[in-house]
Image 1: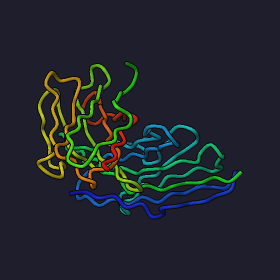
Image 2: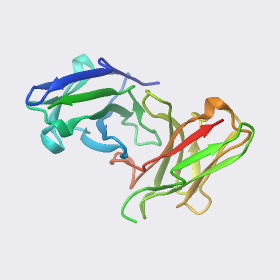
Image 3: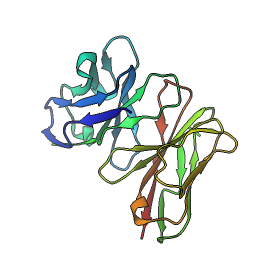
Length: 115
Length: 113
């Protein structure tokens, strides 16, 4: 079975700081990778996804992530954060088996941006 | 509707009571998932439907949990004889087909007292 590890449970940054949230997964085969965001009081929304191709993936709101296969990592980055980025961020993986696999999530990172 | 809709948004149940949680997926989405999210944790997979067929229920924590999707659209997650450890947010997600994005509902927050 696959698993996902997010390195930081709580991150506090000032506005305009750069962000990098770590994500590592364990699975022996090919995977699809995702970052979801959950703003306070709202549902999970997809930030970006990697299925194949260019390992540097750009998502919404200026976020990007890089898939490094050799490191089993899919870290999320943003060059300059805003107060509105305060949210819970989840990394998730699903095996590329073309079958009925649900997402396996990490425990999440609670990001707080101070004005 | 435009998104995945879940009802009720909040449910308080007395221990031992049965509850039923509803999910309306996005129209035309074949796949439907249920997840359980405990406080401070990431969502944990419960079960998966492809149309009306329940293809994976390996994540259901006990035989008190039961899910159905009889006509391949709306799904119901039923929890019998609720226990305090069942308190969590129950999330439903749907996707058009394999290897596409899953869309999540806002969840039902279940509190068992």
